[in-house]
Image (tube, rainbow, N blue to C red; front, side, top):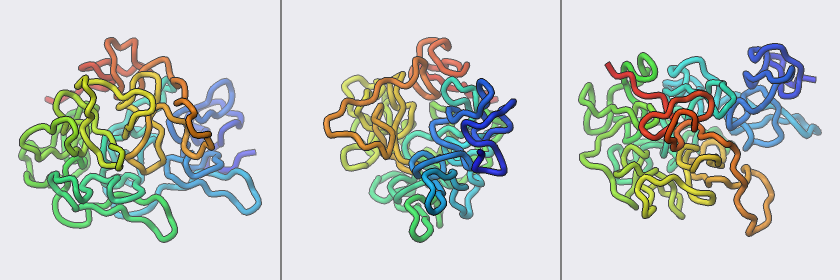
Length: 329
C-alpha cells in the first residue's frame, strides 16, 4: 500500500516513472535507486535516507515518508541536492543531470560548501562560513526551524560569498537564475565562473589556493585538487601528494565527485563533511569495520574518467571528468 497520495512509493506497481515518487519504474515496480537519497513522499525509516533530511513517521509506525524541504526565502524553491529536476533552474546548484546509471535527472550537489537555499546542519556547511578567510567570510547563516537538525543556507546581508551560485548564461543550461553580486566583484565583472562540474559560482580570488589552504569549492584549488573536509571539518584543498588525485575509501569528501570511481560520498543530508565509501549514515557499524565495497562499476557525475564509456548514465567524459561540458557562446 502506498504511503503517499501524490505518488507511488517504492515497491508499488507502476507502468511509468511519472507515477513514482522516485521517478523510476523498473520491472513493473517503483524503485528508490533514481538518486543517492530518497525523494519527498517516498518511503523511509530514518531522516538520513531523505534528500530533505526529514522522515515523517506516524506514532506506532516503523516507516513513514520523506518530508518536503525546509521552507525559506531563497532563490531556488526547494531544489535541494539529490531531488528530481526537469532543468537547472529548479536546482539550488543550478545543475540538473543524471544520477548513476538510473538515467533519472537529479539536482547535482556543488562541490565543497553548500550554496544558498541548499540544506545545511551548521553555518560551516554553507558558502560564506566564518573563519575561511575567503571573500564573503561570515556572510551566511544556516537557518533552522526550532527542534530541526537540518535547515537551509541563507545569505542574510551583503554580497554573495565565495563559492555561492551566481548569474551565468549559456552553459549546460540557458541561464542560471541567480544574482550578480559576488563579493569583491559585483555586477558583470567575470567573477561568476563555471566550476569543473558546470556549476556557476562566485570566484573573487586573485590566485588559486594551495594544498592545505581553506577553500569554498574545488574551483578554488590549484592543480585540480578536491576541496574536502579536514579532521576538524574545515574545507581545505586536498593535501594528497598527487595533485589531481581522487579521494580513496575512508577519506574525507563533500560530494560523490571527490571520491574515486566506484564509491560514493556518504554523508548526512545538509552536511558538507562526508567519507568516501563509508557505510550509509545511521548504520550501526562496529569500530574498525573496513569501508564499504564500491557501489558502481561506472563513474558517477563529477568523478574521474578517460573515456565516455567510463561514465554512468551516458554522461560525457569532458576534461577528465564525467560532466556536461560548458556551452559558453
